[in-house]
Amino acid sequence: MSIETISRLEAYVQAVPKIELHVHIEGTLESAQMFCIGQRNQIRFDGTPETHRKISVEGEAVEALCSEACIVLREQQDFYDLMYAYLKRATIDNVYAAEIFFDPYLHRRRNVPIHAVLQGFRDAIVTGYNHFNIRGALIMHISHLSPLDVALQMLDEARNYIVGVAVDSNYPGYSSIYKRVKELGGLKIATHFTSSSSSHVAHGFCSCSTEEDELSLPSHGRPVNIDPLTSLSSGALKSCLERGDAEVTVSSSYPAFTGHYLTSALLQASKMAALTEKDVHALCCNALRASFLTLQERENYMQHVRHTNVAMGCTVPPKSVTVFGSRATQPGTPDYQAAEEVGRQFSSHGFKLITGGYSGIMEAASKGAVEVGNGACCRDGGNSAGVAVGILSPRVFPDAPLFGNVYNSHNVIARSLLDRFWMYIKDSEYFIAFGGTIGTITEILVVWSVASARISHKGIPQKILLWRPHWESVIENLAKTIGISSLDTSLLVYVDSVQEAVKIIEQDFLTRSASATL
Image: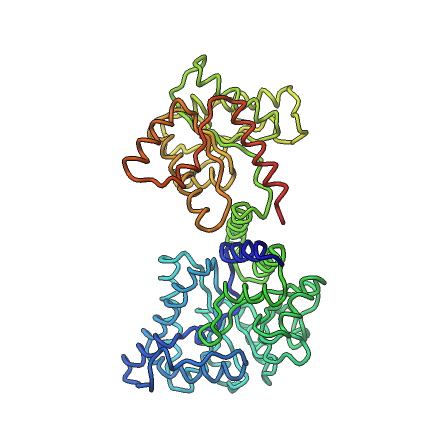
């Protein structure tokens, strides 16, 4: 694998939204936080946070280190702080959702009330969603150390706080736990594998559907999580991806003790198992299918993944062009005619037209596009000829026609300006701006900001074309006045004709399509 390929893969791993399916919250207790909470609870440790923690990849050693560190967790605030710190750290890894294991018996045997554990975790998950937009959920881990009667009691106490239960595969009371989960209703159950002797899974879990499958390896189509930190696991990971005999995923497990949070774990797996962008994408899709997310959350996640795939150049960009411009432009004026020709030319090349859906420039572009659909031949045989989508915001523009201009082939309703901007960005990589006022320049600035951000993430910026007579002097003065960098101003391309715009966008689309890897 070349250095360029590795660099591109690393950029994709860092950028793609992730679902964390197997992280032990107790395993996220970093040394610095352990010392801080310990001091608050009058527990002293030798050394310093920098010298205290030993990193290990051996399962039993990690669990022992984790158990030793957790003696500082005593009060509800301690559990809140632990969860909040993990969710804050997860933003670095672009975690969209996390299904978080916790071991109540680890705390119960130290006489910590389970209510303090549960309430602290849940309060932090709520706060974490508000602060970091990460969807957190608790999975109660019943380890082989927990007596059955205690496990059943803890399950009853935790039922309203958790989405599922993960039971160690060697737990002697598995059937009783399974039966109780079914009686409670509404909870998922998973097997937590603690041995790699027969499964080639060093440390993972699988969702379960029938009691007969609980203690067996995942069969075809069932999800299994793999710890990427051993050569045994990397071999299993690659072979499972190639054969498709299990929906494998990668998670971080005990990141504070192994040194690998989710992005690092994926990068480690990519290096050890020689994964490609396609493999990493498959891991993300597997994690989604294995998760306990709702249908709406799943679709929202996939929208972000698809957008990332396009932004990183992994998939062919949407064949669509978004046109910005004033609502006040009148038919028969040069700008109106040019916008009409833009709609006509791009539609004949198979591009879908997207506009704000109202009058002026938006109407002109839609009119030109639908004329192609009403009889002109699409030059490349594409199926988007004549498609003109209007992104309408009736709550923002109550004085405008409810269903936009008469040339829109169909409309999409945006509930706010922010929704409208997001719809522009997620559905198009190509933008053309004619003259306008505050609305048009706001649209330019939003798209420009997104394009600039992509550069910093090693992505491919959108093509933003500005009609030279209207925008060149405006942008130059703005850049000079507020100090916009030359790198950012280079993201804007000024055009003087429709033919020039078509040539630039058509060539970029062909280039990106040829280099797509997914």
